[in-house]
Image (cartoon, rainbow over all chains, first blue to last red; front, side):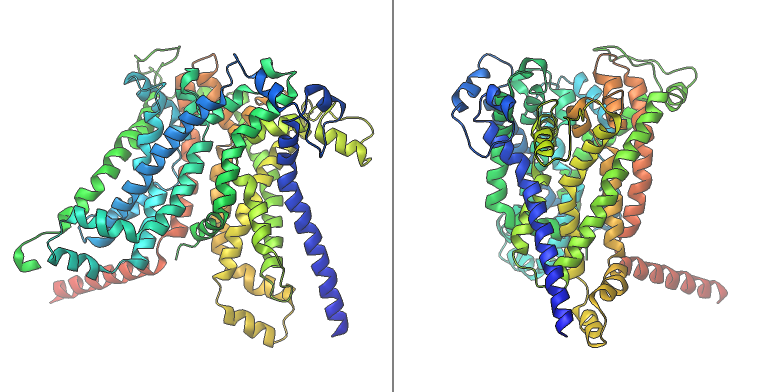
Length: 281
Length: 321
């Protein structure tokens, strides 16, 4: 018994060491990034890892002036497109899920099977057709093609359906009907509030996914006034910043900062959401 | 309700209209359009008119015989494997550690939050950040490795084929193992706890419990992780594009990046890119079919099968009578 306890303690020590190492591995690149954002290019060239911030934040920021990297423009565009996409996805996925759960109609089961079938079809491999389509109707250099397709989000419909199946009692719907509420009114005023927890989790994921997406924005947006954050970031890889290490780190930091804020405020829900996404029963 | 003559079924259709219309316009139509473009001569900047090819499969034949495309498929597979094997092993190990009751690891919540974190950061940002971190001759990684004495002279990670691939695979691994871990832990927590209790009472060691109870019960979730990772890995684009633009010497040129380069970086070969996309699309459809098979409601399918059988038998009997 004693030896078992000793071996357990050794194993536990190993576990903590590995976990702490992995945690450092997660944080360290961002730490280097934030600190180097405050250091001058010369300091970074002398010694690229430092645990002490320096005082060159303002001069690094000044490098962006007059150049194509404009974090404010990228931030606003990303906010608009990700915010719009999230609203569309959350509202219409809830509506579609409600249609699947609350009403019995002939095509209900085939429609659900269809949603399952297209769950994983990615936008990326149909990008050529999407680009040509958007080019023809003049929607390139517009944020609209980043927003409207979110109305049809199969995976969110799937998730919302599972949630509604577990929480919705049709008695509520029936009593609303007796009170004379229309179906659409019932959905907006009674069902949506019930779905709030599920909507919040799904909203976070849609927002972050949309904020981070690069491929579709990259092929559609060529006007730098319309660039979203990831395209803005990709400019930092260009030649004009080759020798401006401090500025590159600052630019990267600015794009990460909003995500860090979201993540550390909502990490509890995000982790729970990831776990939930995998449980299909 | 019924006697009032209100037919609620129609609302099922009405409420599904936005989804269906959006899907048809923004998803199905571009898919068909991509397939169609694959059979045409559509190329050149700003062109929209096209003719069908006399030999309809020309683009597909050309693409399948294109050594760069073939190599890019291989590269995609290699980088995915280099990321997935360590990823699944580490996430399984962490799952075993975090769910073994004997260990009672403290701070699990904090570890989960930190290990998952890289997953929500913009991949584009991470690619450029790692490009700087692995800088040559001065860069944080080179500096650290030399300080620890792991390297005698700075290594040029960007210029060597295998170090470049290794870094791309490492980034993917680093961004995704936390996600896999959380999914797997959720899977373990879903297993009936009495199974573990029974095994403990019977004197099973935690290793035995993990291999004989936990792993077999995780089969579905492991498959889910595998297939979703494959589908995601096939489309690997942001990191290889921004880390080294597919270099050095196409060592990190993935299939998605190849398609992008065909259509959008100078050559405007929309037809070839569309043909290559369709080949990828078919691979993804096969993988999705496997996932669909995995995720369908098994009980419901069984029930419906029984129902069909019952109706068929009833009909047969009717015929006999």
